[in-house]
Length: 575
Image 1 (tube, helix red, strand yellow):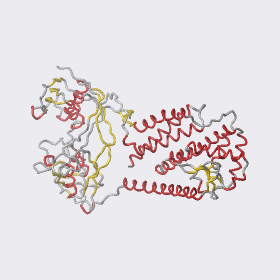
Image 2 (cartoon, rainbow, N blue to C red):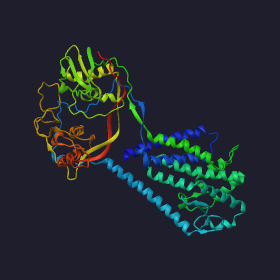
Image 3 (tube, rainbow, N blue to C red):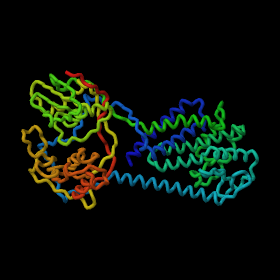
């Protein structure tokens, strides 16, 4: 919810800047009616983005971030300082954290509800005023002892309400008042004011909502002033009439509930505008004018809601960091139907030699940029979606035989050196990005966590420089155990294990606030079945049951999701 509000707020500022730019371009021809129509469209845009913004398709807009030397690899495994082992927190020390995000949502909702309740009370006051007023024989006009100056109230069926002393006015004053208030009725200014009020209640935290509401109130009065002077003429006499009526005491409760002809807050600006030398007066927007505003405004609103910044790291050459490369590399396509894979066809790595047998380009990208991104094996690589690129990167398979002098490690050959080979032979141009995606949030269940602290000495910090066979690394599954028994795992380690595609269909993020290391038992991929989350046979349901036994739970949420975007890729030439 907060992310949606923040996104709408940012897009609303963009929309307001576009509106201000358009009005500046039309500064020699703009009228109060035109300005009112444009800012009314901004209010409608804010409300539309609030209600339907998530349903709009996204238009990625790439922007350059700070320059980097290469594509940032996706590395999820933590590097633990061996000199400072992770602290062990006893079960009694685990506290349920404060969910500040939920607290902020509740605070926003409470304040918005208070503003809406106040606004609804004002609408009720207006209905009471109309119900107790009397209809007079001048069109659809009412009179009431509760008003001291003419007002227009109502947003679906607006009504003009005059004070009881209207019968003592001369004909010129009455005609001016009826022309002004009648313009409010024809222009549906009450409806625009109501939408601006609701917008202010929903975006009470956003200065733009308050500024636009006040601006619309002023522009509505100025547009009706222009209409009156255009019809009746004699702007000096009309300005004197406004000053005369502004001297009358108003009922304060109507200040924000109705369109008041003689509101004191805007009087000086209105009179200055009327008496400006050389200006002309318009009776309002024509149908062609409204059509032009809508035809230009709707695409701008849609564009402001659909645009999404896609950070693109600037690729620059850094001579100090030269990526290692293979000396000789052979790339050959595999026959159609060959399933490929390292294990099934004998692929692998030996000192100075790399063999990748019948792998798709997507699999090679995953190996180079995820599993071995920084020259070290990522024990729990997340599934990172690949966007863009032709369909053949997921279907065509290639066998790669590459050699180099020296004895680089297998992780270096399958990571940085394979990256260089893909960029050279496949002309691969790729960048990483992130955006908000559906995730599962791991939180503390009611009753608190039921976690088993790790026994001292049961695991060692992750370090692949140790000689094989590797010892039991902290945060990794214990070999030979049924299911997945994580030894010395943090909550972040558990989330990484749950985020692999064989476990869950969404990434899992840590929202528990629990520190320390624990031994955790969960079902393994072989014990899970794919399905929708509400299906008892699905992995999400089975894992939810296992997680609940730990005093934790999985909740649907929104969070950052990483993915790769292919900018360019070509089929390699055989050699």
